[in-house]
Length: 576
Image 1 (cartoon, helix red, strand yellow):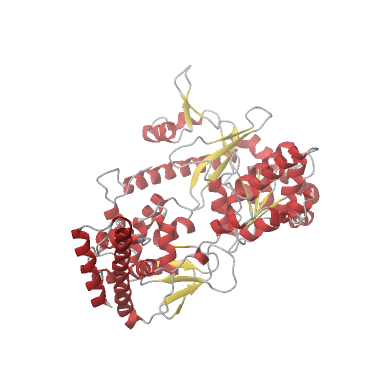
Image 2 (cartoon, one colour):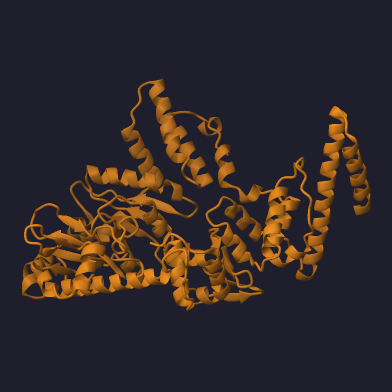
């Protein structure tokens, strides 16, 4: 994967792309004044709170708070990395990617397309093999497991026969990619022949969220280890990013109200066959942060449904801990506890869809599962043990961003451990300061000026050369002067300036400033800005005068500083 894209190219991309054109092709937008409104694609809502500003080339949702430029939208809507979104935009708008400091992204994309094509053709071969003589046992195995022909074909299930690699020995390019790049073919050290790592296994193609096959899962026909085998990590396949069945879930549902996370391919396929078409599976690994972010981008509710044994419960507890930082307003996780020695595949076949869906609807809420497992894992018989338990419980709760949910959990914890008014003893205000920033973001002169410059970059030309005194204690003045000096003579736009700060702590602050509504008519913005600049100049002068007077009282002023004080007072009188 490429590690660098030049700032020049990114600015060029932002100049040549149109956020309104892109988003209008994905969601319905209606014009209101200068902006376009629609239903937010990142959370469930009835009334449109998602706004696109074509002038500034930015989007913002007043419901869930998401905002950004065209690159951010593609990243979150398509579940792509930053560099993948650059590639996608360049393809959509026909902008060639050339970068002298690294390999061309276009070349990377072309290489990946070759890998996708080869792995797709291999999938077709596997699929065809299932329905010929070599796949007879595998096909019979699937039928015995209860799968019908429709579902087998829907998930493109296949079979890898023995010695099939002999048929492609003349295609050295394909062999090289399957061996060196995709790690599907290995070399037998005894005879130096290639063999398929999935040979004699039922094959489950793994698709990414866009529908491209990126890897395979293989299951043995008899009881031998390993029972399941996944593709190795390679150029196009990363287990920590992919979820089996996610593409099919998006394909089957316009609005995804909930997603069921299960442990295996068979579980997903069986649930789909029983018309529960919102199940996904992790690929032989634990749930990851990338998985949760990806799922919460398309739904507000995740239900963990693992096998009904000790390891399944442990996996659910681990999933709970990983999910904590993502429990913001409207985002919910639940836990479906299955009977012992049952999995989704076995249980739905015994009970049927109606009873299984009742279990889904009766899944344990986060709080019920959290406290149930917490008290099972921690027993205390002394004050010391109880204190340790309290700190442990709070260490989990404090990771949750939702302030009010946190308060309720702390209050519930107090009730369960028998401490009255625990919420008052344990002061949650320290968390409030971290989570509720926007409401307490004070509007100073510097911040208002920065906000206006971000929203109307052309105002840069009205900023005079400001003198910065080392003694100044005006918050943000140094940054403001550097900011103006850096962008003043450049043809910058709001979206370009914000993009400059991607990955920095300042980006969030600047994004808040961009959303400030100053309630000023367009024809009066310039005058308002100039008055603020005048006010800032006076503040700088007054601040310096106060410093000199204070210095005079402490140690006296030399002739040069006395001259400066006299001069500054004279200028200040003229300014006022």
